[in-house]
Structures are given as C-alpha cells and as structure tokens.
Image (cartoon, rainbow, N blue to C red; front, side):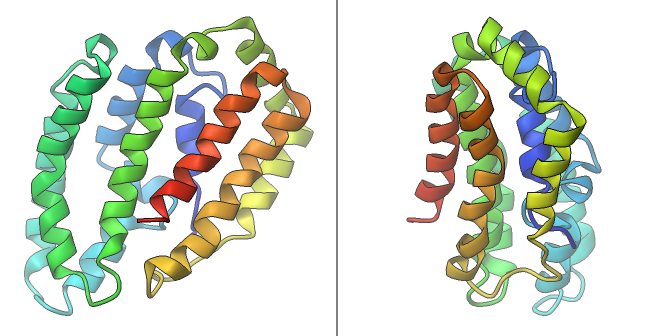
Length: 218
C-alpha cells in the first residue's frame, strides 16, 4: 500500500499538474466524491480498505455499513457547488457532511489508530483552505510557469521518486509514527517549487508544508 500519493493527486487539484485554477474548488470536490478516489491515490494508503479491515476486528459486520456511510458522505460533500461557495460556508458544509463518518471511524478503529480518518479529513479540508487563501496566486502567470516546469519529465520523476520512498502496508500504529513520514513527504513537492519556481510561490509552498506540521501537532 503506497503511503502518500494523495499529495500528488491533491497537488494536481491546486494546479501543479495543469488543472485550470479557476475550477480548482469544484474539481476537488468532484475528485473527492469519486467512488475510487481514496483507493487510487491517497496519503494514507488504501483508506477505505484499511479502515474497514481494522474496524472489522471489533465488528466483523461493519464493512458494508462503512461503505454505505462513505457513499453518503461523498454525496453530501458534492451537493454544494464549492466553486460558488465562500470559505466559511464550505467549512461548515464539510464538517456537517463528514461528522458521522468521522465519529464512526474514530470509535471503531483500534486503540492508537483512532487518528487515521481524522488526519485524512482534516488534510482534505486544509487543502481547500489553502486554495481559498491563494486563489489569486493559483490563477497567476507565475503559477502557470511553475506548472510548466514541474510537468517536465525529469522534474516529475524526481518528485515521484521522492514520494515512492514512503510506503506502508498497514495503518501506522500511532499518529506520531504516521507524522514521521507525513511531514517530510510534503517536502517532495515544496522543495522543487521553491527551487525552480518564481519566489512568489514560496508562501504557497511554505503554507502547504505548514499544513502538514500543524495537523501533526494536534
């Protein structure tokens, strides 16, 4: 199970791989709501399968319920047009939609691993917060130029090679263990941005790294 590929997936949503910046918020929710999204590319491995597997230890019949709850959650999040929603309204909407699955997964995961779903949900919310904060920058010529540089084969291989160093076959036993990789992996993206892109993008890169650090402080 690969650890942090959602970083690449979410990075594409904020523009690093050429997504139209004007549509990023709506695209994020559409991607988040796809049935296979969390299984195809995410920072915490095959989330749906991993959580269901761990929760089945306590309740062998819980998998079907979690699958339905996840579908319900994605449908709820997708119901609001995020491209036309202000930050405060989106945060309230996201919290309301994810409250049930957040509570259920936290209670069914084994001791020490309760953090798992919260980390993913808070990370997704944090990414959207960043795209609100840096909306003008995401639509700038400097961002377009940066995307062009980062899409070059050599740079793409460097980023992916860095991320491939982080692999997991199970949910880490504690948030402390998870964060030993969760924070450093962000530098696979922020270091190239700061080294080859316009200095105006440095704050975006710093905020992206700070997001991971802050999530690991709580």
